Image (cartoon, rainbow, N blue to C red; front, side, top):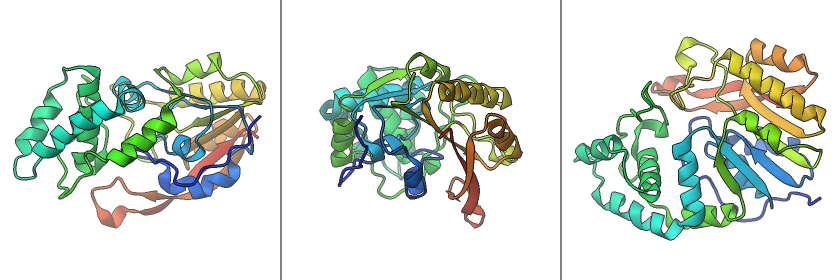
Length: 280
């Protein structure tokens, strides 16, 4: 079993992601397991915890097929991907929003072109928010960034290096039960958060919402993993419903402070309470 010590000059997420954990790592790090063999992340998103830990063996999954395709292209075809992104970088302009909307509306192309499209839209859309409508169509308007980081070559190459040995696939989170089986495994879960109000519901991450029944399915999955000795960490909103779900299975529940940044009203941004839950 190898002790996990993050390396210097660690790679970082190559995508902006609502609820991304980059700014929370310093609060999380004391609660990561001191050692484990295999790392699992079933809600991959921006992958901040994976990039911080840089585990020697990782299985990374998400239900979002477009996202998983982008990760696979970064891992396997990073130089070709960089070339595709350079084309977007040359054509993007605040003075010509038609290019953004033409790219947003065009969903065809090779896997490489789709990956470049996702990264381009992610870097140039409003607030870096991934949102789709009921037909699964990406529908976020263009942001007003003067110099968006559309093609960050060094970042993409370092991410590719970190991902080179990772297994990456499309899966529902419950598939983790097929892989994680012992105390040598560490599972980090960053699900769509339980909404604290109707205006805080950002669960349209795919065309399928993540409702209270899904939160219960996740709790049951984590309980089964813990019964095998698997080390499980979950983050979620500071909700009495979430607290009660994990108190029922005797998980450890801590409150941390998290920045609220996805809000069109800057006066509503600031620190809010979130839950950090562990089985160990």
